[in-house]
Image 1 (cartoon, rainbow, N blue to C red):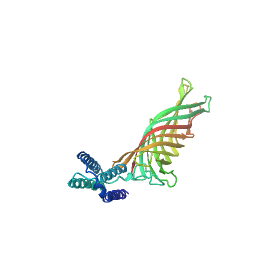
Image 2 (image 1 turned 120 degrees about the horizontal axis):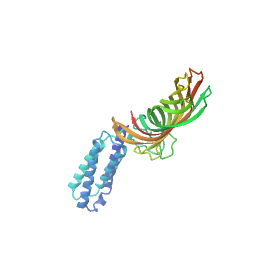
Image 3 (image 1 turned 180 degrees about the vertical axis):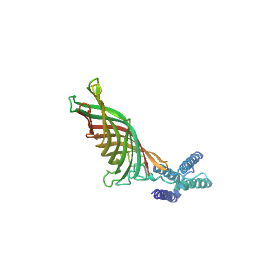
Image 4 (image 1 turned 60 degrees about the horizontal axis):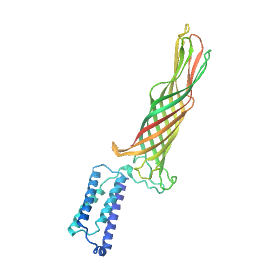
Length: 361
C-alpha cells in the first residue's frame, strides 16, 4: 500500500507539473508583457526553494514519512512550479532555478510513506482506522489507578451476630492484550470513518489483599476477618472506533469497548477463638471465578510513525468500569465448639483510569 501511495504521489506531482508547463505555453504571449522578477523577488524565491530543499533532505533521512508531511511537501513543490512560470531577470537564472527545483522534486518522489499513513478519505466507507498503524492487529498495554467497592457478609451457625459490610479499596490496574479492527462499510455518516473489531485482555491488580471486614464476635476481642486477593482476569471485548476529529490519520479517535470479564479471586477467612477456653485460631481460603461486564471509553492518538522497532506507536487515555455479581464464599469450622462461620462476597464494582500504548505487528 505504501508503494501504491508513493506512485500516486509521483503521478500527482507530474500531472501538476505538466499543468504548470501547459500554463506556461498557453500564456506565453501574455507573459511576454509581464516584467521580470525584481532582485528582491528572486532572492525570496531562492530562499523558498532552499527551504523546500532542506525539508526534503530532513524527510529523506527517515525510513518513512507520514501522509500529512508528504502532502505538505507535494503542495509546496507545486506552488514553487507555479512561481517559476513568471520570467526571471535572465534566462540563465530561470535555468538554474528550474534545474535546482527539479532535483528537489526527484528526491521528493523517492520518499516512502509509512504504512499507517494512507489518507482516510471521509466520503463513504474509506480505509480502516487502524488503532496503531498499517496492520489491523495490535498489542496493547495500559496501567492506571483503580477504585473497587465490595459488598460482603458474615454468617454463623452459632450464636455470633451476623454482619453485612461494604468496603472500598484503591489499587493499580495493569492490562495487556491483543486486538484487531476492520473498516465499517456503509455505516458511518458522510465525512467520517470507523472500524469495528474486538480482542482479549489479560489484567491484574497490583496491591495485594484487600480486607473486606473485621468482625469482633469471640471472647477477648477475638475477631473474624475476611479478605480477598484479586488474581488475573480475562476480558473478551468487542468495540468500535470513530474518527470524530476528522479523517486524517494524524488525528485522534474515540473508542468504546465492552464484553464479559472472568476474574479469579482468592477469598480468605480467619477466626480468632483463642479467647475462649479450648478455642483455636481457625482459617480457610477458597479460589473462585467471578463473571462480570466491562465497559471502556477512551481517546487514542498517534505518538510516532516508526519508533517502536520500526512500527507505529499510539497512546491512549480511557476510563473503565467493571460490574461483578456474587464472588463466592468460604467457610471455617470451629474444631472446639462445632459451629461454622461463613464469609461471602456479594456484588462489586470497579472503576479505573488508564494510560496505554499500542503497537502494530
